Length: 237
Image 1 (cartoon, rainbow, N blue to C red):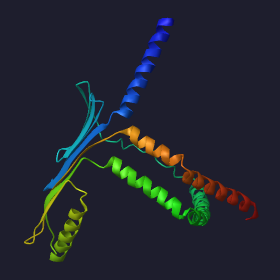
Image 2 (spheres, one colour):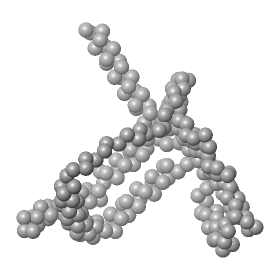
Image 3 (cartoon, rainbow, N blue to C red):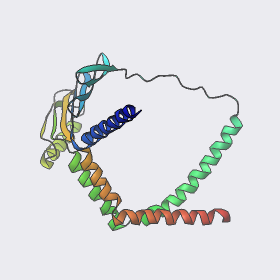
Image 4 (cartoon, rainbow, N blue to C red):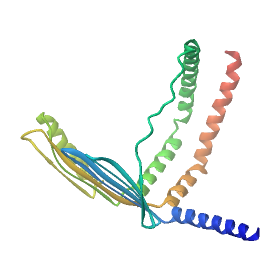
């Protein structure tokens, strides 16, 4: 019995160690795709160097693989189409349920407007914007490249594209942005390359900082107060 308990304990410790390593060690990801007469793409994600998930799509269809310690396993991407058939009887019951749902939606919409007004405060808005800014910095890929040759049937659309490309080039979002505009005829050809890594623990720590801040507590108190108001108003209606 003690041997079985020891095996279970070591197994749990191993699972915990793998879980902690997966959170701390950055996950590498890459994406390569484009369009040249037909769309194509290839994406992969590597966890702890020994686990790799990849998927590719081309004219032959979608193919997904899971590679663990050098062993490849094909993943069937097709979702079963079997759906439960709805019973034909009880149409009146369905109509009454729809009417009840419509009333609930209308009441929720009225309560949602007052909640939105209370949440629309300067410190709360900036609190959310700072979170989004930090998450974009954390999740920003190391490589973001776009290349292509694009031309539209309408020349003014091509001119708009050229203006957008020049604006994006000045923002320094992409490591490489190379799009040639084609004026002679309608043409579309391009490719997108994304590479980077994500440390899950960094994302979790930033979200934890967001959740335990006083502004998040302020939002929770506003939501609780609005729900109490709804409970008080329900018997009157």
